[in-house]
Length: 86
Image (cartoon, rainbow, N blue to C red):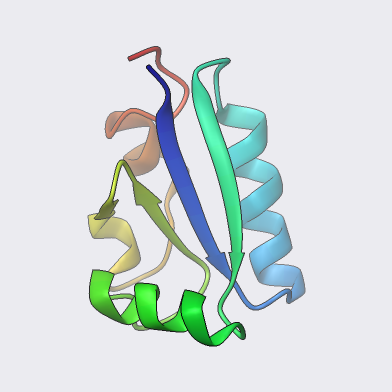
């Protein structure tokens, strides 16, 4: 079973930096999906999840707490399972 990591991005340099960091921290059972918030279907999913700003990271269908206020924090993401086998 894979851990699904969704990164909502607008394609900007800040988003690209988070994508790179998450990919580097991921393990073999982390499935990384980079989603373009400019796509209407992606934007709808982001809204359903409570995404208010990008970049935002969702792990296994749950918007990470670090992405609800100050933005993604790698240590918080690791504590939530990024880089660990399921």
